[in-house]
Amino acid sequence: MLRVLCHEFSTPVASVQALARALAGDTAPLDAGQRVEAARLIADHAAHLAAMLEGVRTVAEHLPAAAARSRVSAVRLADLVAGAAAAAGVTDLDLQIAPQAATAAVDAPGVRRILTNLLENARRHGGAPIVVRVERRGPALEISAADHGPGMPSDVAARAFSGAPPPPEGAHGLGLWIVTQLVAMLGGSISASANRPTGTRIDVTLPLVD
Image (cartoon, rainbow, N blue to C red; front, side, top):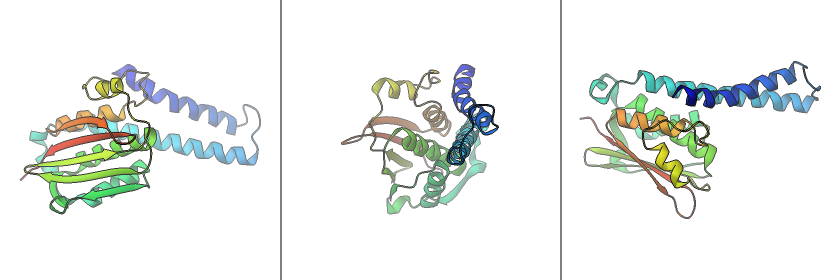
Protein backbone atom coordinates (compact mmCIF):
# COMPACT_ATOMS: atom_id res chain seq x y z
CA MET A 1 0.00 0.00 0.00
CA LEU A 2 2.86 2.37 0.80
CA ARG A 3 4.31 1.74 -2.67
CA VAL A 4 0.96 2.69 -4.19
CA LEU A 5 0.80 5.92 -2.20
CA CYS A 6 4.37 6.82 -3.16
CA HIS A 7 3.59 6.26 -6.83
CA GLU A 8 0.35 8.25 -6.75
CA PHE A 9 2.01 11.25 -5.12
CA SER A 10 5.40 11.10 -6.87
CA THR A 11 4.18 12.07 -10.36
CA PRO A 12 2.39 15.34 -9.45
CA VAL A 13 5.16 16.25 -6.96
CA ALA A 14 7.82 15.76 -9.65
CA SER A 15 5.79 17.93 -12.03
CA VAL A 16 5.45 20.70 -9.45
CA GLN A 17 9.19 20.58 -8.77
CA ALA A 18 10.01 20.86 -12.48
CA LEU A 19 7.57 23.73 -12.98
CA ALA A 20 8.92 25.53 -9.92
CA ARG A 21 12.49 25.23 -11.24
CA ALA A 22 11.36 26.66 -14.56
CA LEU A 23 9.63 29.60 -12.87
CA ALA A 24 12.73 30.22 -10.74
CA GLY A 25 14.85 30.45 -13.85
CA ASP A 26 16.91 27.34 -13.15
CA THR A 27 16.19 26.05 -16.66
CA ALA A 28 15.54 27.76 -20.00
CA PRO A 29 13.82 31.14 -19.46
CA LEU A 30 10.01 31.18 -19.86
CA ASP A 31 8.13 33.91 -21.65
CA ALA A 32 5.10 35.61 -20.08
CA GLY A 33 2.58 33.16 -21.53
CA GLN A 34 4.59 30.14 -20.47
CA ARG A 35 4.90 31.52 -16.93
CA VAL A 36 1.13 31.91 -16.68
CA GLU A 37 0.60 28.35 -17.93
CA ALA A 38 3.23 27.00 -15.51
CA ALA A 39 1.51 28.73 -12.59
CA ARG A 40 -1.85 27.30 -13.67
CA LEU A 41 -0.43 23.78 -13.85
CA ILE A 42 1.09 24.12 -10.38
CA ALA A 43 -2.31 25.18 -9.02
CA ASP A 44 -3.97 22.19 -10.71
CA HIS A 45 -1.40 19.78 -9.26
CA ALA A 46 -1.82 21.32 -5.81
CA ALA A 47 -5.59 20.86 -5.96
CA HIS A 48 -5.16 17.23 -7.08
CA LEU A 49 -2.70 16.50 -4.27
CA ALA A 50 -5.03 18.08 -1.72
CA ALA A 51 -7.93 15.92 -2.95
CA MET A 52 -5.84 12.73 -2.71
CA LEU A 53 -4.69 13.62 0.81
CA GLU A 54 -8.26 14.24 1.88
CA GLY A 55 -9.33 10.90 0.44
CA VAL A 56 -6.56 9.02 2.23
CA ARG A 57 -7.34 10.89 5.47
CA THR A 58 -11.02 9.96 5.21
CA VAL A 59 -10.24 6.26 4.76
CA ALA A 60 -7.74 6.33 7.64
CA GLU A 61 -10.08 8.07 10.08
CA HIS A 62 -13.46 6.75 9.01
CA LEU A 63 -15.14 4.59 11.64
CA PRO A 64 -17.03 1.39 10.79
CA ALA A 65 -20.67 1.99 9.92
CA ALA A 66 -21.91 0.52 13.22
CA ALA A 67 -19.99 3.19 15.17
CA ALA A 68 -20.68 6.08 12.80
CA ARG A 69 -24.18 7.09 13.87
CA SER A 70 -22.93 10.39 15.25
CA ARG A 71 -22.26 11.47 11.64
CA VAL A 72 -25.67 10.42 10.34
CA SER A 73 -28.12 13.22 9.56
CA ALA A 74 -31.00 13.91 7.21
CA VAL A 75 -29.62 15.77 4.18
CA ARG A 76 -30.84 16.96 0.81
CA LEU A 77 -29.15 14.70 -1.72
CA ALA A 78 -29.11 17.45 -4.36
CA ASP A 79 -26.98 19.63 -2.06
CA LEU A 80 -24.67 16.70 -1.28
CA VAL A 81 -24.13 15.91 -4.97
CA ALA A 82 -23.66 19.60 -5.85
CA GLY A 83 -20.98 19.97 -3.19
CA ALA A 84 -19.19 16.86 -4.39
CA ALA A 85 -19.35 18.02 -8.03
CA ALA A 86 -17.84 21.39 -7.10
CA ALA A 87 -15.03 19.69 -5.17
CA ALA A 88 -14.35 17.35 -8.11
CA GLY A 89 -14.32 20.17 -10.66
CA VAL A 90 -17.29 18.74 -12.57
CA THR A 91 -19.34 21.34 -14.45
CA ASP A 92 -21.24 19.24 -17.00
CA LEU A 93 -23.45 17.24 -14.63
CA ASP A 94 -26.83 15.64 -15.34
CA LEU A 95 -28.38 15.02 -11.91
CA GLN A 96 -31.50 12.87 -11.64
CA ILE A 97 -32.95 12.35 -8.16
CA ALA A 98 -36.14 10.38 -7.58
CA PRO A 99 -38.66 12.30 -5.43
CA GLN A 100 -38.57 9.70 -2.66
CA ALA A 101 -34.79 10.09 -2.44
CA ALA A 102 -34.74 13.89 -2.21
CA THR A 103 -33.89 13.69 1.50
CA ALA A 104 -32.26 10.77 3.29
CA ALA A 105 -30.54 9.98 6.59
CA VAL A 106 -26.96 9.12 5.66
CA ASP A 107 -23.39 9.48 6.86
CA ALA A 108 -23.03 12.78 5.00
CA PRO A 109 -19.20 13.10 5.13
CA GLY A 110 -18.75 9.52 3.93
CA VAL A 111 -21.29 9.80 1.11
CA ARG A 112 -19.86 13.16 0.02
CA ARG A 113 -16.37 11.67 -0.22
CA ILE A 114 -17.70 8.70 -2.20
CA LEU A 115 -19.42 11.05 -4.63
CA THR A 116 -16.40 13.35 -4.91
CA ASN A 117 -14.07 10.49 -5.80
CA LEU A 118 -16.53 8.99 -8.28
CA LEU A 119 -17.07 12.33 -10.00
CA GLU A 120 -13.38 13.22 -10.07
CA ASN A 121 -12.54 9.83 -11.55
CA ALA A 122 -15.26 10.24 -14.19
CA ARG A 123 -14.00 13.72 -15.06
CA ARG A 124 -10.37 12.67 -15.35
CA HIS A 125 -10.80 9.35 -17.14
CA GLY A 126 -14.27 9.53 -18.70
CA GLY A 127 -16.20 11.98 -20.83
CA ALA A 128 -18.98 14.51 -20.38
CA PRO A 129 -21.74 14.68 -19.54
CA ILE A 130 -21.54 12.82 -16.25
CA VAL A 131 -24.93 11.43 -15.25
CA VAL A 132 -25.71 10.87 -11.57
CA ARG A 133 -28.92 9.08 -10.60
CA VAL A 134 -30.14 8.72 -7.03
CA GLU A 135 -33.01 6.42 -6.07
CA ARG A 136 -34.41 4.89 -2.91
CA ARG A 137 -35.33 1.21 -2.90
CA GLY A 138 -36.69 0.00 0.42
CA PRO A 139 -34.07 0.49 3.13
CA ALA A 140 -31.29 1.31 0.65
CA LEU A 141 -30.06 4.32 -1.28
CA GLU A 142 -28.89 3.60 -4.82
CA ILE A 143 -26.44 5.99 -6.49
CA SER A 144 -25.06 5.59 -10.00
CA ALA A 145 -22.47 7.72 -11.79
CA ALA A 146 -22.01 7.24 -15.53
CA ASP A 147 -19.61 8.95 -17.92
CA HIS A 148 -19.36 8.91 -21.70
CA GLY A 149 -15.63 8.27 -22.08
CA PRO A 150 -13.76 5.32 -23.59
CA GLY A 151 -14.79 3.00 -20.77
CA MET A 152 -12.88 1.08 -18.13
CA PRO A 153 -11.06 -2.12 -19.15
CA SER A 154 -12.45 -5.19 -17.40
CA ASP A 155 -9.13 -5.98 -15.70
CA VAL A 156 -8.94 -2.46 -14.26
CA ALA A 157 -12.53 -2.74 -13.00
CA ALA A 158 -11.85 -6.12 -11.41
CA ARG A 159 -8.78 -4.79 -9.63
CA ALA A 160 -10.43 -1.54 -8.55
CA PHE A 161 -13.34 -3.27 -6.83
CA SER A 162 -11.49 -6.29 -5.44
CA GLY A 163 -10.60 -4.43 -2.26
CA ALA A 164 -6.90 -4.78 -3.02
CA PRO A 165 -4.78 -1.64 -3.47
CA PRO A 166 -4.35 -0.64 -7.13
CA PRO A 167 -1.05 -1.51 -8.80
CA PRO A 168 1.45 1.39 -8.94
CA GLU A 169 1.01 1.64 -12.71
CA GLY A 170 -2.79 1.67 -12.48
CA ALA A 171 -4.22 4.49 -14.57
CA HIS A 172 -7.23 4.95 -12.32
CA GLY A 173 -5.02 5.23 -9.26
CA LEU A 174 -6.31 5.64 -5.76
CA GLY A 175 -9.75 7.15 -6.41
CA LEU A 176 -11.82 4.02 -6.99
CA TRP A 177 -9.94 2.12 -4.30
CA ILE A 178 -10.87 4.85 -1.79
CA VAL A 179 -14.50 4.65 -2.91
CA THR A 180 -14.50 0.86 -2.43
CA GLN A 181 -13.11 1.17 1.10
CA LEU A 182 -15.64 3.83 2.11
CA VAL A 183 -18.59 1.93 0.64
CA ALA A 184 -17.54 -1.19 2.56
CA MET A 185 -17.18 0.81 5.78
CA LEU A 186 -20.74 2.08 5.35
CA GLY A 187 -22.03 -1.46 4.84
CA GLY A 188 -22.80 -1.00 1.15
CA SER A 189 -21.84 -2.54 -2.17
CA ILE A 190 -20.30 -1.23 -5.39
CA SER A 191 -20.02 -2.50 -8.96
CA ALA A 192 -19.03 -1.31 -12.43
CA SER A 193 -20.60 -1.92 -15.82
CA ALA A 194 -20.38 -0.59 -19.36
CA ASN A 195 -22.39 2.55 -20.07
CA ARG A 196 -24.13 2.60 -23.42
CA PRO A 197 -23.08 3.60 -26.00
CA THR A 198 -19.73 4.52 -24.39
CA GLY A 199 -18.27 5.01 -20.96
CA THR A 200 -18.43 3.42 -17.53
CA ARG A 201 -21.21 3.27 -14.98
CA ILE A 202 -20.49 2.85 -11.27
CA ASP A 203 -23.36 1.68 -9.04
CA VAL A 204 -23.28 2.16 -5.27
CA THR A 205 -25.88 0.80 -2.85
CA LEU A 206 -25.86 2.11 0.73
CA PRO A 207 -28.12 1.10 3.63
CA LEU A 208 -30.22 3.93 5.02
CA VAL A 209 -30.38 4.67 8.74
CA ASP A 210 -33.77 5.12 10.37
